[in-house]
Amino acid sequence: MAGFLDRAKEQAQRGLAQGKQKLDEVQVQRAGADLLKKLGSAYYAEQRRGGDPRATQDALRALEQHIATHGEQGLR
Image (cartoon, rainbow, N blue to C red):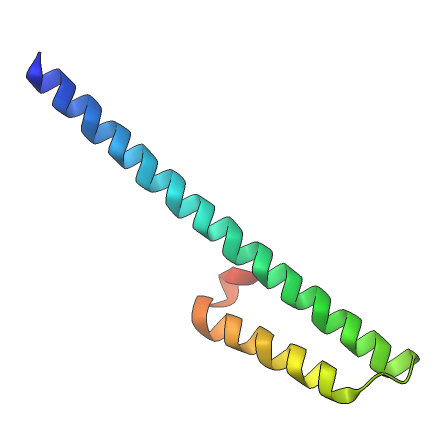
């Protein structure tokens, strides 16, 4: 009986670890999507509404930092 419970506990822990990993991936991807959206908004404002080019550069730097930290897969 103890062997069964040990195996069940290990399987549950693996499932929790996999779930946490997937959650982390989704959060990184959402953050990347938000950065892309901010970059697009800043660029549109700069090109069409006379927005500040510094906002576009700041958004681009933030996106590049995200990619440097998480890789291209952080933008999916």
